[in-house]
Image 1 (cartoon, rainbow, N blue to C red):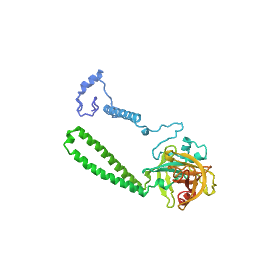
Image 2: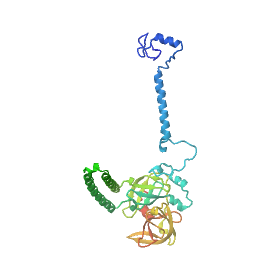
Image 3: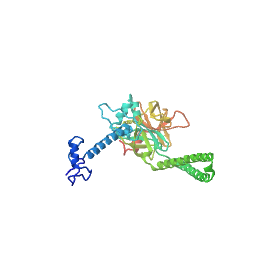
Image 4: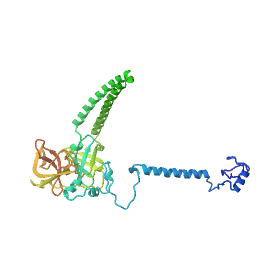
Length: 364
């Protein structure tokens, strides 16, 4: 039979083997209303029901805690009929999730003329070894033109960094031996002032260790040629992941491929049609002043070390390298590449047709 109190099956008809009640006395108290008698419901005990409701309460409380106090990025997106605001983020790859990056940039930075349209198609490029410059989209598929020296570290720079690292390694070894001797003295355990001085030396030692690790990482990344050492930033501050890098063997040119859909790009114009005194514009990131526009004129053609280049008096400063040289129609005629150090107001750009010739296998 079933115990009327704990609802467990019993072999005895007088006393419960589990909870120990005497059935006759229990029924008498139940009939008088002195106690409440639980009734079976589909074979689920009262204890089991209590556990279920307890688990539900825990889940509800946990969910409230998680969604109420977790960082915003962990919360699920709320559906709304209102248009989503354009996001500005510095996390790599976020911009690539948009269906149209061109529309995204046009929303946050509306272009009112052809030069501003070209500005939206210009990017800021940084590398893990400290170099930076400009670049621009040459088509809607994600190909970016820039200078090779912007994205490629020179061998002599790696050698200099390696020399400095070895000097730091020698200093670290000397410091380690010296600190060990200082700590081995009884004075280190008896004299607080002495111990504090040793601790200060240890801090300096730790700074040298950190510097050594930074240089090691820098050298390894510079020699690896991997794409994760390059950061491409759009005008709204969002970033795109770099998928591949191609460097020219002839000229100071490089072609990057980034992720993303429907990208803004600058159309090309034949630089051979340029006339002297024709107005030209540059877009770039000179000295950290991002997405700056300057203007000048076409000064003529020059031959620099056997390479035919465009000469202009439009300002081309460090950080402009790799950016576009534009006609008044906002079309790119050249890739800004260098300034003449011995003179002021003289800049050079590689003709854009060099890009189409050298990277014909990648871009139209």
